[in-house]
Image 1 (cartoon, rainbow, N blue to C red):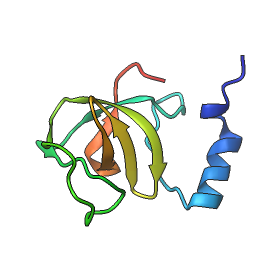
Image 2: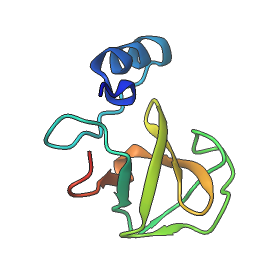
Image 3: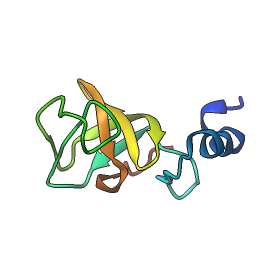
Length: 97
């Protein structure tokens, strides 16, 4: 079955319309649905900006997050709560596609 969520056409459309330059891809080229926090403590914010307020305690290194969407250098994620983190501080979970 065709997966529109991970399609190259949809990725190209996101880049053109939203200016998305987020490139968190695994070895197979598919955008992962799960990532892991790589920073010692990662602030999770209410919006895709350093100026957006924090919505919870910082996430610890190794915390798994579900990727919901991308906006520029920011990624909306969900753990028990939903918020935004900078893409430089997460990486794909091994084995996720």
